[in-house]
Image (cartoon, rainbow, N blue to C red; front, side):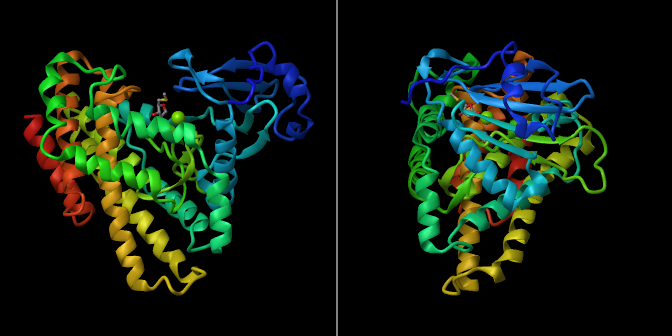
Length: 406
Ligand code: SR1
Ligand code: MG
């Protein structure tokens, strides 16, 4: 691990910003008010606002995992992975990426657009807000970044160089452990409501672990494109109010888990988190139109992803990737997305780093919602190759949720 760089504080950010003449067009760096707003698991996040209300966000990696403390050291180099993610996403999907104001490699921090008037999507979903277009914008975003960083758009030498530069072993290891290993074994990171013990222990029976092992192997080895690596609904902003004419319906942030991996992993992260939102909405008895809308999200994301990928396909640089190959590859990505979706949902119930969708529910509802997520997550992993498409997935999911949440 490299020597830790000193971390900023609310008190030291103003002096730091005065050294950033390059940000003068973003805000008046000579007079700012600063707040620390990081509510994630890993980093420090400051928002600095000048006298006229213009702001900037500074994200600095801590030399440890914030949610645990100094007993879990983590290299501050992860901000370099985030910077690579922003570089690619700003170029390939600018509408769905916050304006990126660059990396200060020495201080291990990045500066990005202040989106204070936007809302974290998980927060909006938890509140029962319908946010039109977000799921489709994300499907399009994943396709744009995946296509543009893959062997479909770059020469083999370029792909290899980019994959090598994007190597992110520490953060990948967190995913390999927390998502694809620990929920299926005894591990001190795991925690669940006692009523769920039979459901959790059942995950270790009947061959599910062998299916998860296949997903883990794909995550470890299948370097298809630069992926976000942690694309849950807490890594997405949606507009605070109505969508403006030229505004995207979603913006993707928190890209520090990025690396060259399986494209279906990002789609699966979204699917799994849509499932958490669906289960929450059901136990809370949210209005039918909200539940019905939630049930369409995976379809919206997939359909937009597929359409954008097909739109870009004629521009591929290597015609040995035939149209038949594309059909085969899309089927593989779909099965990966469903399987990783199940694993991403299950980890939020069993393992470390839970999701507020379920955690903020009162005990009885939390247990029921969590049990339903485990049942659906398992069905997704085991059935990922048989579920033919989004319609089929929605039918399976609704049937299981109805069965579990009578
Ligand atoms: C120890 S880090 C826990 C989780 O936070 C991030 O958001 C990732 O989802 C990671 O698994
Ligand atoms: Mg994150």
